[in-house]
Length: 278
Image (tube, rainbow, N blue to C red; front, side, top):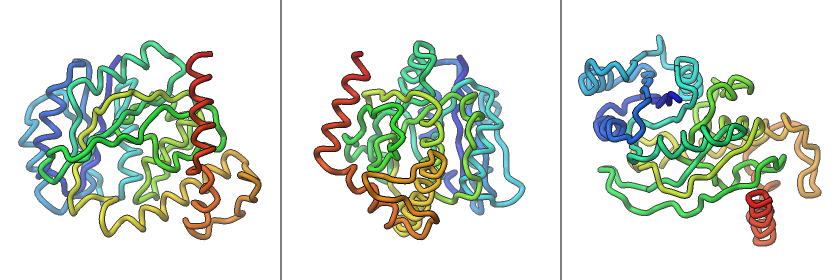
């Protein structure tokens, strides 16, 4: 089973060395890395090409113009040749067993379309700060699941074939394209949580969903959830009508506020328990 590591780059070439080394350290041998540069304005192209040089496992492409992350990640999936795909940002890294653990699930459970694990938050030098403990197994087949609060997170892997059965990533998304991908795949099959930390997530000033971009990210995320509600034909959620048109993210997140409650979380754990053992 071939695995495609998908890397969307924009001005992050200076961090790529550690990402590159983490790929070379993988226990799973059958992988390729597909890199698509979105017209970086720094020396990313030169730096990245110099790092992987003539390694045939790395395929490098460039957009003709700056398109944004939604378009770029969608294009990467089209360029991939593997049965299973997983995004790794060029400023991040994965641990040696990351690909092996994911592919083992896809090989064993044919109805699983997506896997995810936990991430380790790191500083700008990729030194670990804290492990994200919020990730756990979610209920499958729940029309009211919107990954809010976020549970599905890096390292996310998915069946490429299943992706093409969805509406695909919205190419107009500048942020929250990952949430768009997760929700569309969730609607197509089962997801599995890998109870391990496999992804090193670097915090730095240029992070697309960090710092000044947080509010923009929230707005894009709200719109992604709204569109998922429409795809699922949900008229009422928790006794409240869903909006006919998208106005702002606060309206969407207020509608889902009940999912943060203790009773709801207990109910979710019970559902997961029964789905795992019965």
